[in-house]
Length: 279
Image 1 (tube, rainbow, N blue to C red):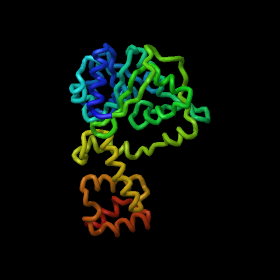
Image 2: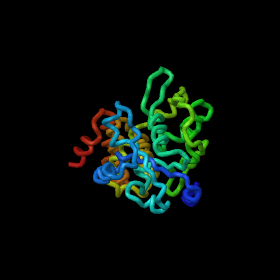
Image 3: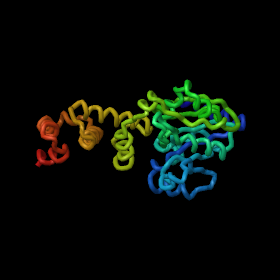
Image 4: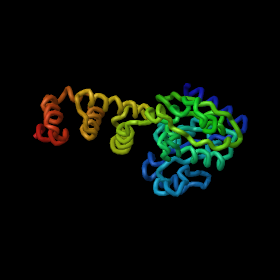
């Protein structure tokens, strides 16, 4: 779906007096913005309400009522711009309290071993995986209280997930991760941690303001490092960071082959080897 499609759905929801909610990962906000968010009006609701998530609550997902905002103003707001912290937005007939409680329940899942796990069910990289499993009984429960769930994809592109549009969630049906879904959700954490780090420390390396596009850019750089034979996560991260900062790396560094041979062959930290060869 295009940005225009999303804007039309937003406008239609407002004409029909439906509610619009954004899900914001406030841990991805710059620290001043995160603190400002926490001190803002009480209509914002944390989703990590379980006691065991108390320490994560003020860094995790929150539900924000954005029904009063125009679509362009929503996208331009510091909490939502660039798709960095804004995980998705929802069009619904459900009340804020009921929807927040529902999405909080959706942060917990069971695997085949019977273990209860926290999952990032609202994250843009996870939600489409859950949506694709309409063969599992919990699917109808998860998507029951919403008409549409809009997830950012590539820059200016959106994925629209359709729900049942009930005014309140159906009977609770815990998310169960079967073998296939468990495998699908074994997501490499490295691209996400490196993207978050670079967004805070060196945002100029990115060619897009959209978090999804930035994540893709980081994944490509990490893959390039692995194709060079690097396996240690710190080495792969260093390679990716250097390539993102300089698109010609490693072609423009004559000592690269020697550095790679020592890092891989002698199992030495790439950063140490590069410093030695640069002296």
